[in-house]
Image (cartoon, rainbow, N blue to C red; front, side, top):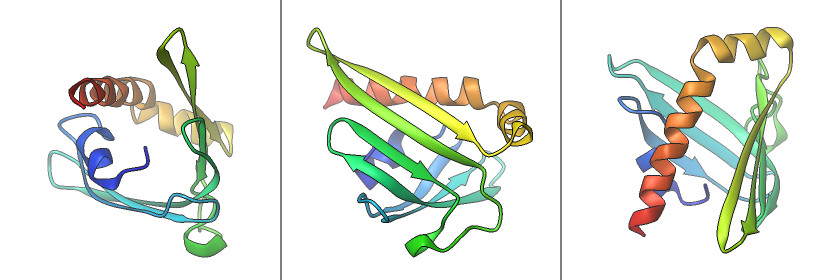
Length: 129
């Protein structure tokens, strides 16, 4: 979640890729990613980090782009937590959408299945480290 080269390896569910990841992981730091579909279509994703607690919590949003500049259409805030649990890590990912319509749109894009697949890819990568 905090290393650009590793994010490229797992963040989007295959056959999608994340060829561009530029992150400044600190409160107010920017995030720029490009998601690429199997047909070559590209979707930029820009936002900022709201909260960063190393090894515990990341909160990010697309409500702002770089340096607290409001985005044209905010969509969601992500809250990622990591907690030690019996020598393992409990990983929790929450998505808070601005509107019910945004939530439904994200679900229609395959949010639940996609985030599940990405998490499986993250786990597989973590096992190799």
